[in-house]
Structure formats: C-alpha cells, structure tokens
Length: 351
Ligand SMILES: Cc1cc2nc3c(=O)[nH]c(=O)nc-3n(C[C@H](O)[C@H](O)[C@H](O)COP(=O)(O)O)c2cc1C
Image (cartoon, protein in one colour):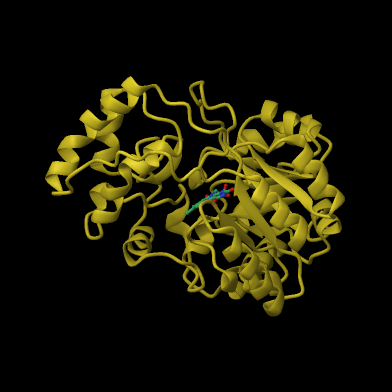
C-alpha cells in the first residue's frame, strides 16, 4: 500500500508516481526533476534520432542517479491502399487551399517512428533502468534482450485482453490507460472500433486479470485521482497532462493557453491528424474529417499528410494537434519537483 508498493519495490524509487512519456513535450530537465523528487521521469521518443537519445541518457545521468524511463512506439509499418491515400488527399485539398499551402506531401515513406534494431542496440548499450512501449511491443527477442540487460519493461494496455497479452509476453509492469487519457491511445488492435474503456472500469478489471503490477493512467490530475487509483488496486499512477503545465515541459504557448482554458469536455478522440486515435483539444478540422467517415491512412502516414496543416497553423486552433486529457482543467502550474511533492502529500493525506 501507499507509498511503498510493488512498483517502488521493483523500481527502487521513492514514490509510485510516473511522469508519463510524452513525445515532443518531455525534456531531460523534466525527467531529472521528477526523478530527483522521488518519482519516475519518462522521455517519450518517436522520431528522435538515435544519437540524440544517447546524449539525453548522458545528460539525465549527470542530473540524477535515480531510475528513469525511455519510451518508444512499437506499431506495425503502415499498409495503405492507394485509393485511401487519394481520397484523403481530395479531402485535405480544401484545407490546404484555405491556408495557401500548395502541394500535399507526395513522399510518404518517412517517418516510420517505430522501434528499430538501431534503437534496440542503443538501449542495450545505454541500459535505461526502465523501457516502456506504446502501441504494443516489439518482437519477443527485443524484450528478452532488454530484460537480460537489466531493463524493466512497461507497456500500455487499453483493455483487459491487451493486459493479459502483455503479461504473457514478459512485460514487468502494465500501464492501464483509460479513455480519459491525453495523447494517443496505446491500443495495439487498431482495426476494430475502439469502445474506450474508462480508467475507473479498466484498472480493477486489469488488476484482477494479471499478476504483474498495474499502473493507472488517464484523467489522474491530483491526490484525489491517485488515491482513487490505489483504491481500485493500482500500485502506481502514470500522469501526463498534469506535467504539461510544468516549466520544464516543452509546450508551445498556444498549447499551454489551451490547457489554461480547458474544460472537461473540450477534447476529442481523433484519427484526423495521425491516423491513430489520440485525445486532443477539439477543433473544426477534426469534426470535419470525422463527419465524412472515410477510412484514413495508417499511422504515421496520416501524420505526414497533415504535417503542413499542423505547422502552418501557429495562431489557428483549428488545425492544431494539442494533446491533453479530460482532466486538464485541474492542472496547476508549478515546477515538476514541487508537483511531485504536492501530489504525494495530497495522496498521503487521503490514503
Ligand atoms: C502530450 C501527450 C503526449 C503523449 N505522448 C506519449 C508517448 O509518446 N508515449 C506514450 O507511451 N504515451 C504518451 N502519452 C500518453 C501517456 O502515456 C498517458 O497515457 C496519459 O498522459 C495519461 O492520461 P493524462 O494525460 O490524463 O494524465 C501522451 C500524452 C500526452 C498528454
């Protein structure tokens, strides 16, 4: 039970609070601050060059001697039907014209963003204490070699069936990611309709179904959420949105402003930007793509196609892909170490 749990026993840290990996928004400063305050800091990597990841590990190790987490996407390579790509181009043309953007990208071969042999070799060399995956796992040989190198493996699950599959694949800790969560859903079954199990329902069912530690994620913003997650049987929490308001996070002004003005119902689950369901601030572009009910290209091809729209729209919320979760309105702006201390004190009082 709080604050010593299976999670802290396994990871050798003080508090069962993981700052979620958030590709593009996490920084070495954020991770080190969280780790030094007794939590677990996570770097989210998608397209980051392998050499940068090596340098990050060196920087983090200079800033902290505590355990930290490096996170990667592990999705299948996209398999796109040419007619789906063409229909999507037609759909995007009016938006491109509206913003005066010219040609829709033709080269869709990059970026792949998924976990590669090069990444694996790097990790076996730098040995981060924790390695986590989103969108499923890489092949079993990668998991076995990372575990043999001493890394603990975490992976997101959005259903009980996914959590059971992760346990059977040798994952050490499952992150039960509820529907409320900001960012991409970690689901690995992308070809069926996602019915979105909420954190409150998901966590206890996964706790009952597996024997490995379960970390709750999605909509947890303060000590109340942490205490609730523990009552549901979780032995730790992973919080993303709450850390976006820390000065150490890499968050644009428009993103921060959206979070400052957030309400409980202003986000949507959308495939319109990347091809995979992600929770982000709702806007007209998403609504318009959703209304046509057309199949979209796979992740991350859709991300390439929407790239110029996202980049051109600095001052236009309508095309921005602003990832955050349903509890963003509860965010508090404070340094990451102070946030960890505040969360821990609040949860301790309640528990
Ligand atoms: C801006 C943002 C980016 C995210 N990027 C990643 C990522 O790169 N890898 C990952 O495993 N999860 C990612 N997530 C999901 C988190 O791991 C976690 O499930 C989620 O933040 C929990 O919900 P909350 O945002 O309500 O705390 C991201 C979430 C946000 C808000």
